[in-house]
Image (cartoon, rainbow over all chains, first blue to last red; front, side, top):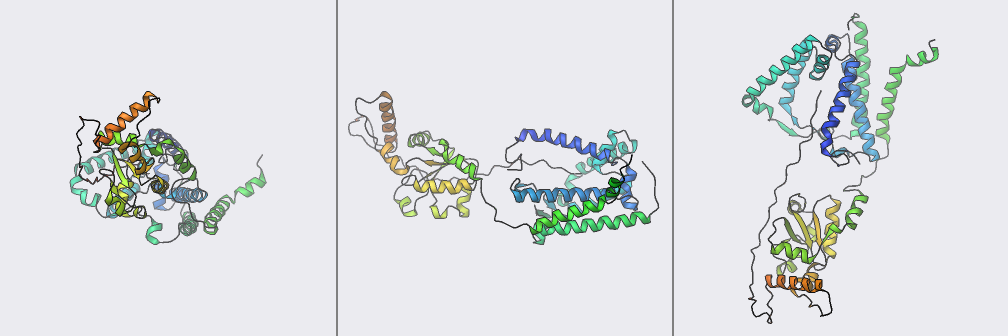
Length: 197
Length: 219
């Protein structure tokens, strides 16, 4: 049956409307769970709040387990899902820059917009920084091009490159996630409590 | 009033959630594996099979060839020997047993042209159609009646008797004209010059259409 849009159960034209609705829900839930606070977000780097790690790990697990069950039951074709292609060094360098921006600015691109929506001035400055970064990157695109579109590995997934069954992979991933949750909880308890909002 | 029992249960909520996760993920590992059906769904195949779009008549095909319509590829699914003896103009030979080879894939699995399969009757062509359809190749059609029908209708059309309708005689005159296009001479038509048109066999290399980029997202 699914995915709904590639199989034309929902037509292509709806994809933007659905994207907007999902985006609104995503932003609302992020704000409601405190993700518009840069102190909360940066807490993962200083060891007093690991909600970012927990949320993203949990979200990944819920979706991957759900997808695999739906694939097993025939509601979704696992192989026709879009897999983002890997540009190895582009991803590594981009990830490092994003990490530095995250720890120094206290937002990731999505949460910064979320915080702008509730009127935080630091987030507005952060978004301004993003726009300047985009401008510089666009101007120097010919210089970055070899890294940007080089080291192309295609639409690889961890399951393909490790050569193990996706079911075993998800099981191991779940165990790793739960261990990570326990470890970060121990770290958080060792740190002094910090109050913020 | 605080429900003490509920509060007691809720204090274990993270542990409960972790256990649920483990059970669900473990369930994936222990589920009995089965071979997945490849190709399109049986319902879709059945729907395509009963659709009238599946066949193209010899008259329609003659019209396409005479008008030099560029939007279709003719594929002969008979053996190579039969293909060499005679075939339709501009047709490509892909014998049934080579249907799934890589060379033929570029002809069959594309969105640009209509593919018209034919054989002596439509029996082999139907088999090829079924295989292609299960693999979700688009725009595959079968020449109804195959080459036999082609000869009986286009090359050697039956003259309608006098008590048949106007439509039958119109169809006959179309078929007659078509057969003259394909080089059949009629002695009673003193004006008609038999022109044997040799159309060079041309290979059509279809270009693959670019697929629409899916919407990308990120954090």
